View 1 (cartoon, helix red, strand yellow):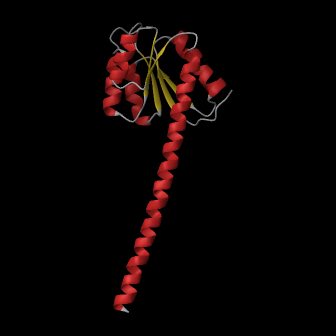
View 2 (cartoon, one colour; view 1 turned 45 degrees about the vertical axis):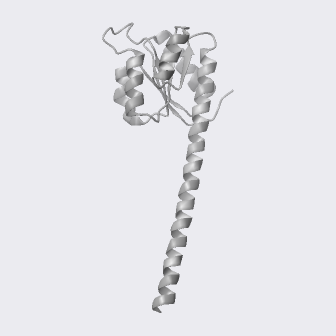
Length: 167
């Protein structure tokens, strides 16, 4: 079922055999309005963070093809320190609780094991982030509306004060 989520997702994984099918699944089957940008290394992702993604999906092992590439934990730490409002979902073939706990303790929004259910779990997490983003936008609009009303009330009170005291 396709979800109408207008969200920008960065997906970092050096395993093209996993990266491309997941990207295709998310774009075609789940989020046709989403912008999903893929990267082979975390460094490439960091260089693009100024594009303000709503979410980063980050593989734990990132140096299987490019040996000098940083691992996912190092990239996670950099993203969460420089862009703390961007949730990061850690992805790994390791089904290890201590690794998952380490990622969460270092700021990961969630940890997903590469398995037969990974695609669905990631889809659900993206929906949660998209819904949260929409809730924040609605709240910001409400706050902006109330600020405008308060400003109008203040202007009216100032005008009334001027009229009653100087005219």
